[in-house]
Amino acid sequence: MDITDAVNKRKTFRGFKPDPVPQEILRELMGLALRAPSWANTQPWEFAIVTGKKLEEIRQGFIQKAAEEPHPDLAFPRVFPEPYLSRLPAMRRGPEAAKRRDDKEFRKEMRLQGARLYGVPCVIYIHTDRSFYLQQGENVNVYSVFDCGLIAENIMLLAVKYGLGTVPAAQAVMYPDVIRRVLGLPDSRLIVLGIGIGYPDMNHPQSQVYSTREPLDKVTKWYGFD
Image (tube, rainbow, N blue to C red; front, side, top):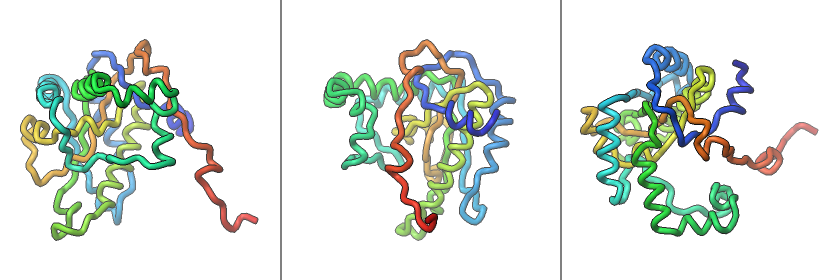
């Protein structure tokens, strides 16, 4: 598949078929994804790829905690000043959709959907070493997380090649204590992101929704091209 096709076809899916993703496909995909760049080739990422009973155990643990305030290892953004606020999908779907963001029942249902991990049959958890991220306990090495983002993009683009859909979800790591307990991960591992991966359900309402992007010339200035 051409890289341009993969970039254009990649989207965040929130509806998946129950079909399992074969381990040999995941192994091949992940082996290719490892070509991602990183600071001085430090490759700060490790992965926990989870399916079956273990994933269901995490899912149930999240559902039980759904009423609690999330406590991810990396804090969620709380404030969205402009221009970021107007880029949120709900804001672009009209005033009624925007109002729903303030609807407590709607937000509760959205949190439950996130806790259920959108029904994905498999999740790729990306984690990194906490001491490499928090050096001497005070200096934040943002590049370790930035590098995890680079390999996450590789994973999501390669998924398109295999007919798979992905959902990169901070909600998948909002209760890291559950993930650590189920998978036996030590506290020294900083859980960065969960990428749900599976065969997308194209009949799901959100499968036909594609988020917009700002025009190139709105976010870019050119220098030295005169």
